Image 1 (spheres, rainbow, N blue to C red):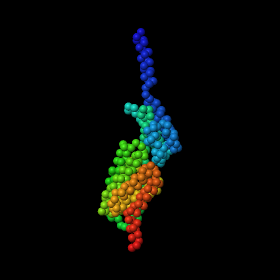
Image 2: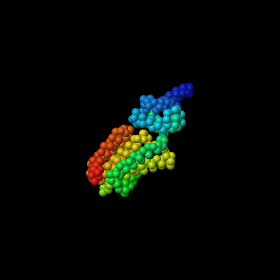
Image 3: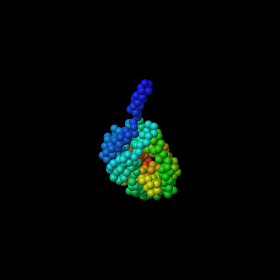
Image 4: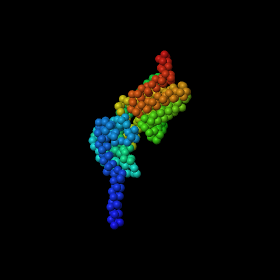
Length: 334
C-alpha cells in the first residue's frame, strides 16, 4: 500500500518540477526568432518601435533610437537591404543564454548574437564590417594638405617641428584608443562614454601640444600633428587593415564631411599650438581643450554640423590669440 501511494506522489512531484522549470531553450529560440523578424523589419524601415518591446531596460539605454539609427545607416550602407535570417546555435552559461543567427542581405551576410539573462534580452551583437572606402581617405589627405599649403604662403614652416608634430600624432594614436576601452568600464551610458572619451582625448592632445610648443614653432608643430593624423595615419590605417589584416576600415559618411573635418582640425591644431608657443598660459590650454572636447562629443553623437562649428570657433580664437592675423598684415605691409 505504501508503494502504491508513493508512486502517484513521485509522479506529481516530477510534474510540478517540470512545470516550474525555467524558460527552456526552445522558448528562448522562439523569443529570438520573434525578435529577429522584428529586427529585420526595423532595420529596413527605420522603425525603432518594432524592436523596443523585446529589449530589457538596460539594453534600451545602450541601444536607444539614436544608436539604432547610426547602426542602421552603417549596416545598410555596407550590406544593403536585409533579406532573411537563420538560426545557427544556442549556448547556455548559468543564467545567460546566447543565441547565434546569420543574416542574409543584398550585399552579403553577417552574424548576429543575442544574449538573454533571466529571460530578458540584455545584449545584441552584430558582426558587421565596413567596406573599403578610399574616397574618404583621399578627401582627408586633400583637406589637410590644403591647410599646409595655405600656411606655407603665410610663412615657411619649420621642417623639424613639422616632423615632430607628425611623430606626436603617431604616438597619440597608440594611447588615445585606450580611452574608449576605459570608458566602457567607468561610464554606463552612450553620452557618458562620449563625454569621457572626448575630453580625455582633448586634454591629452592639447597638453602634449602645449608642452612641445615651448621654444618651438608651434604653428609648424600643429601642422605636423594634423598631417600625421589625416595623411600618414589615414594611409597607414587603410592599407594595414584592408590589405594586411583583412579587416576593412571605411571612412563612413559623406566624403565632404571627411574633407571638412580634416581641413578644420588641421587648422585648429596649427593655430592652437601657435598660440601656445607665444602665450605660455594654462588658461589657453583649457580653452582649446574645452572647444576640442565639445567638438569631439558632438562628432561622436553624430551632430557633425555643430561639431564643425565648434572647431571653427577654435580656429577664430587661434587666429586672434596666436598672432597669425598680425603676421599676415605685416607681410602685406612689406
